[in-house]
Length: 400
Image 1 (cartoon, helix red, strand yellow):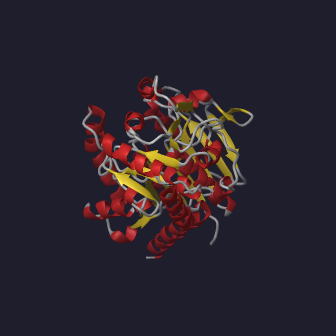
Image 2 (tube, rainbow, N blue to C red):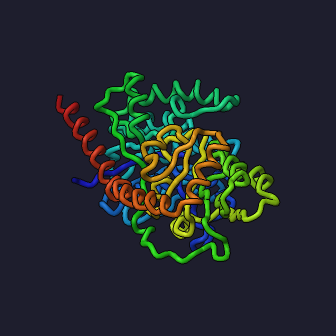
Image 3 (cartoon, rainbow, N blue to C red):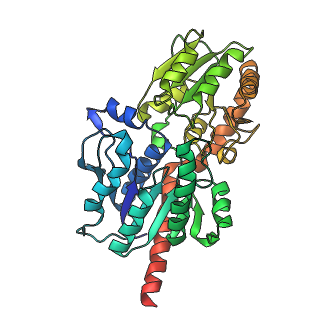
């Protein structure tokens, strides 16, 4: 497959190191690192290894503005203002990068859509400017996945849903993380031939196994949460469920975010409860290897990329039966699913795993077996195949 020049547009990307290899803590407070940041970075690295040229345009978060090389042939441009309430302005600042003519023509524009409304209009403008195909990856469908009753959520579902549908109708290809989202977009009238299900994954190089125990002194079994402490993720539900367990266990919560104070308040005074704060993504494999069960109690979720990393670590999972999670977590095979928001059901599932080491072992084996299909090099090759397909279609249209 001939290397291509990809212009990648994403509202979030892994933050710059503050010095050495440490991540700037201001960036993690601005937008705690989650699945989309890891997804876009891992894909960029894998495509770089396949010799594709990439220009990545993203927000600066709380880091510095400017361009930084990444790998052999990728450059990451960080734009915008370090102000959380004005984060959408990154797209206005990005215009100076997106609209200029590069030394090598852009072959494909690839937009990564989360809950940021600015990315899709920017991507459509970029595709017109460079006269090339547009590919969109939907990390969170604001029209089909987002839930909640707050004003922000209602605005996102209404205005954002319209922006999403309009942009996806004009995209040459749409990548979704789950078959559930593919079916929802098909129901919107999007041609099935333009939709490709390619999930998020894990980097096998980060999961060599035999990691040292990072929670020495913490009793087992260890029940853990790893991710953003955000309203969507409902880590607070796990902290509420933990004291309702009847079986002895320890709780470890790893992460940071806007729900940090609520989680800390709920955990205050609870025995065998440990809150670590933020850890860098490179440290997550050792964290997962030191747990016995991973919990993802999300209110809504397109997929939940930490689930694939948990499977690579051989961890049984207890997760909410929402969104695309059931496509990753097979109930009774790799983990257990519970109704979202049901604290008692969550506590009961945790009791079941805490009381039965044999069940944990069986689910662990199922998780490891299923993990192979989520390795990033394999997934990146599928994304590159989508690029080749849309470029071939674009070439046929030019001839016609």
